[in-house]
Length: 258
Length: 305
Image (cartoon, rainbow over all chains, first blue to last red; front, side, top):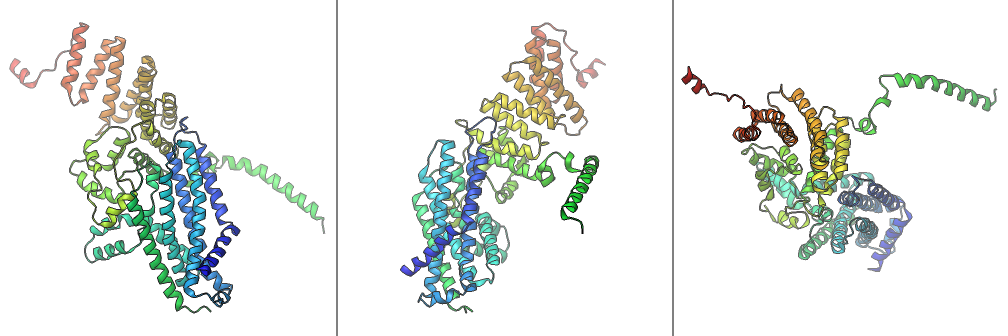
């Protein structure tokens, strides 16, 4: 366990050495604050558009941080040949995969925490309403969604040769799932067999990342998500992440490093 | 070899001279973009109309607090709506324009239906799955940013101005802002009788200035006639609104002849001409005006002959 955390700490240190997070956070803050300063029909109580744009930027930034940080982890170790002394420590390949995953996930958690604190302050000062439990649920689900994305990217980094191609493919897959997964079942039902069975099977098999996207509930001041549903969604993310990490380990176990 | 400083000065002087010559030519050149109406036009071209429509729909989504059919649900709704001969786009406009289409509202009330599988059933915990409207504590204001963006992207979309003005004026009590926005719309669409009609309502209902309202509505009626009268399917609804309001203004001002003239015109297109006739008869009786000759039915004329 200590080896896993030691590896994770290296990834976390990488976050504050690199400029990605700072640039994304400053951009998010700048755009949100600029939008917040616009005078719309002399009404300073209009806030939902601001919440929507801010959350959209947070989601985009978090996906960029998660995918780009994870995609370069193992390829960079191989390119710099630091993977050999690392595995000779001795650190097993399973520990390496888990360490990289934990590091990237905690890194995203830290970044998300800062983003959500900013969001909470911006919406609270405009709205004079502090639904902290709703924000906590949103942050938590967002973080667990990123766990699936990170595990998927880690698996991708072991399959695709270049980290850029891996990042691009994962971005397309994740955005596709977020936009279309909810409706795939309806599309499947309108098709004829065998297309219906195939699309329906895909619909059931893909990780439903849209469960974790509760932006609409936050923007429109929706009710608190039922805690049982929140808990099951967490278990769902845990299950998928574990499955993808296991798959990544199986691929990595047989992979030649040189 | 000349000094590099001399060369630099020579190049600078050449550039400066060329710039003074080219600048005047560029201003008069047909391909110059300096005459274009803004950065958005240059960057987006006609695609801005698509985005304007998107943001107009976004305002409607906000009005329904996020409970809104996606394009996949629209396909399903469209199948069912074909029975009642209504269109989705018409409904969208009606919603935020506050003209409730109750059939559409009923269908929308459960456009999700019963969940088809566990994914859908469980997923409903994480998005808005209850139908509510923004109709309390001034929450309606939340639709305004999207209407503002829609108007910026497509200033020729008249309904954006009229819809925004309705909410600003009627629900949020922002008469000045509504009037400003309508005037902005009128500058972009000087021939729009819809915007003129709304401006007339601002003058009549909020400013209580019947004289100004009458002038604006008369202009609106003129614009309507110029644009709609020749059409096979004219915009009858707005014609009735304009003429009806003009009749009301004239009645209030005691101009009975003018009021009667507008009511006669209103009767032409009205779905209930008998009601309008009653109103005309009332005016004639109360103010002892000479009644217009009643149109005789073909049966009566045959009997007379």
